[in-house]
Image (cartoon, rainbow, N blue to C red):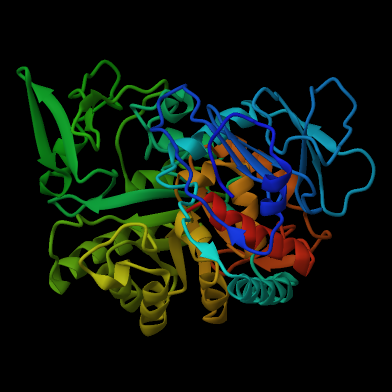
Length: 502
């Protein structure tokens, strides 16, 4: 039963009710989140799970399975690992990690930031992360659901053994997107979608960087996320569509490559309509796709998102013109660099697959977390259909969709498609690890140092000289592989995650 309250003594009758024959799910009364303020306490007593939602949620699990046993410890104390200790502790500067096949004392890793900070992002992303379930589930239906989950877990255990792809970490717009209104200074470290951000990401164990490509009016592919570029001229806000600009005009915004030359001030519009100065700790000029190929560490793969405006209708001729301009640069400059293409625009994704067969094409989808007029964008099921019909190689889904609909993962695997995810949940190490166990092939993340560190700790490496395919189909060695877990462990995680993300 979910409920909000301070801890209180339960009567014997309440205890009997909680252990009764019916499984009851109540709606949590969660106050509106306010920055830095606690939002109450949630307890799920039947399963022994408690979520204390202060600045971020913490989880207590009486008997958490073997794969992920995290315990709060000061870095100077012996790494003792009682199962009753918190999985996530608000005040903890470090936590102990025991690998699935590790013996002896667990390794203590102190992150640059505490787990508390990363978990705060989970709360910030919480549209409805705590389920609002008001129904009383009869015994026979609950048992049937449990059997289905157990069957899925058994299937997942079989599929995960010998999985043929490495688990990839991909830097979102480089070392991470810029969230200018966020109180988290890590989200304003380096200018997103810049050469500097890409090379900063390359200092960590990322496989790819993801970035957005648009084509200017004079047919030059440039790297920029927003549809419109904004500045202030003569005291007034000026907004121009990126694809309506000549390359020379586009490059005049922000810092300039030529020393002593000042560019136009670069502003950014928030979703709530506010316009903010695009201030970051480490700025860098805007760049073209060709510059990225020439100046970014060659070991780093590129996840090239083909960026289009959701509010515009594109004809096939226009899409072909744009994609051919991008392909020209890629074929001339890519050399041996791993490349994957992706797009939210279904027609553009299909067309890119028709125009070339050298590089994989992935379809980007919200997976039903948002609804669009084009039904192909509204579910993982539709994404699978589109990929199979057009020969695309994979899907990039919002992470919440994967947790809401875990049954989609075996279907995606049966279709021989790769699965990546993006979204704020991917900045939480525990959520990333869960996806790894569920069969996701990789994650696009903003907190590159934290997530690459967590992945290297939590995901065991195979024996030396193990060969595994990466996302672009190339064979790599010493890749992180999925460890073997029991049916019970996977079943437990499958039950837990949908309750965390609704």
